[in-house]
Image (cartoon, rainbow, N blue to C red; front, side, top):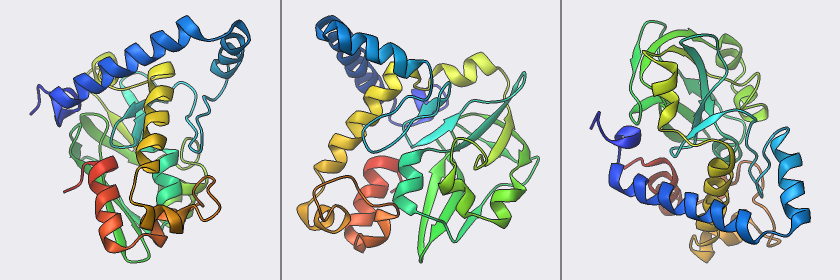
Length: 226
């Protein structure tokens, strides 16, 4: 498992990444000049995607976690905006202790909200050197500012370059998040009718409106939790 990309479902991820590369290339080729210029403007700051935002300069695991800010071989990690909007303000977040090891593609922490538990996969291998005490005291911060004050852990990685290599960033991350939106739209109508009553974007905390079966589908489909 250690040798597989993201340490889970390696072949499937390679296919997804190849698809995203092709999608980005086609958009660059056929987009009007004005659209290309707009894309350059977007890349100068945060990278917005429909419904769910991306943080500038961060690297994303397909289990909706990220790694990025830090110094040297220490990187900050957290959950992305999709996870934050799904769960809404958490009731609690269970983080590993300082000194614990985490593995890319394996369970790193748990987010709890209204009786639901969402295990989340670590985006990197390494040793936890700090936890965000502010998030432990006020879990809602992780949903309010997932790419800033809501970071969860700081992890010392064996190699920063190697740790981030298998993650998605820039245009690939934007294409992947757009694909996430399309997959969410294809959920059974019974679930979407609750979370998107006006046909627009999901309401924050929309996971709380899902029934147990729909929640299990989301956990498997988007977070790789069996």
